[in-house]
Length: 85
Image (cartoon, rainbow, N blue to C red; front, top):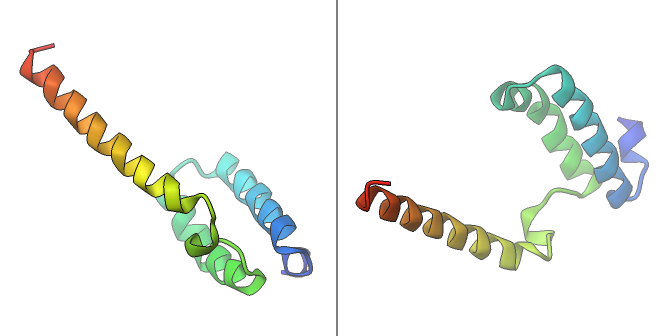
């Protein structure tokens, strides 16, 4: 994939996003998309140096925030069931 490989990692990520968006238009199933594109996108991402979670600076606060939202959603769901709402 010289189209993606010859770019800076930021632009390569943008190109991969556009490619994935086009595929998303034709294949609506998330598991179908993963089965079709992951054998191509994962090695390509390793090759151009993108998509490593450890290198995403906002992951340090986003993952705990998502866990907080998950626990909050479970609590609100339990509360609504407890009051028969």
